[in-house]
Length: 234
Image: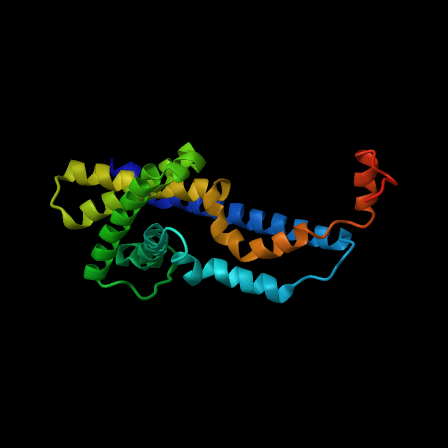
């Protein structure tokens, strides 16, 4: 078990992290490349940059939209995402691993804050699942992965909390720690190939939407020809 833990902490973690970074970079490059090509082919090259920036800020900081519809669910979702980001990055044990691996370290959460935010994130995830299952509209739009992802995301939080705060036997501790590490690495591997990749695409989404309405020159004639409406009165 000890050898398996060392492998999971070392080579497997580096592999998972590399796949995540390369996968996200690929997505960003392909999106930028597609946007540039769309802009070059567009007949109307005037873009509402101020509107795109304003819409992007509204997406990133949805203060207005939070209280417009399902305010409780929206707030839970925001707090859940904050916990997902803050706890893994600023947990002392994780920072110590980074320092041992590449020599970098940064500020860490006090233990009480880390434990509280960990439990809160688990609670937010469970509340979101209940809210999704309890809403007919949400159930209609949800896919299996929409239920699976929150469960998968809190497994490292649950196992990490137990390993850090509960007295366990050596075998149980090693098993939970292995689940903690492997589940985290599975998330890293799947991140570029799932809907969670929106975490890096969100800042560009409104610019892509703005470009999507800029059709290439003469495309209106081609559409009319395809629909056999060429020369028909409007």
